[in-house]
Image (cartoon, rainbow, N blue to C red; front, side, top):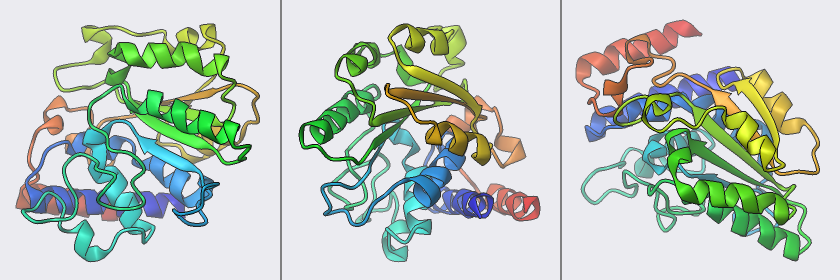
Length: 263
């Protein structure tokens, strides 16, 4: 079921990328499997008014199409709102705005903010004796931001065993490969040195993602997901240009056909 959900999400990302003529398609496609596991297997959200709901934060806000398509697949977004993405007078902007829909917990897009925000949510739940959890998805280029490392040092001090962080490790950002721009590897060892529980998985293998999420821990948890930018559409995979390229009629047709055949 999760593979089918992920496939539907990817096809819908292509559709709104095409209709909006907007960028960041590769960024959105790389994290779909992580979002599929979270929204269709993990997150406990009785309602968005429930204080004890789980919280999800997409820190890499330029990957908004991935979250929008996931929320649409989950029926948290109407068809009208979803297909108004990045249109004049539309409901959904190119970067996340929490005022557009109750399913969007924070506004994001300025990289490095999601993890510090997640600490606040998680600590608030601790203070209120709530048993719900907080999940945040970051991009790997984000780990070049100083705010990430301040939060990394602080989280264990705060005892945030209710916080799980994912890194979408696709090794491509706007101007090259993070490992070549501002190298942060070995990132798993760095987070362990701050007393985090760290796991590294294939970010396109839903079973590995599920297993890592379900491991019980009394520490803040980091799940590094090794992914491919543009995953699912062969001519987009691991190509930096798809941080910017526009989905034309031809690209939409070819990409959708390939996704349909992959099932």
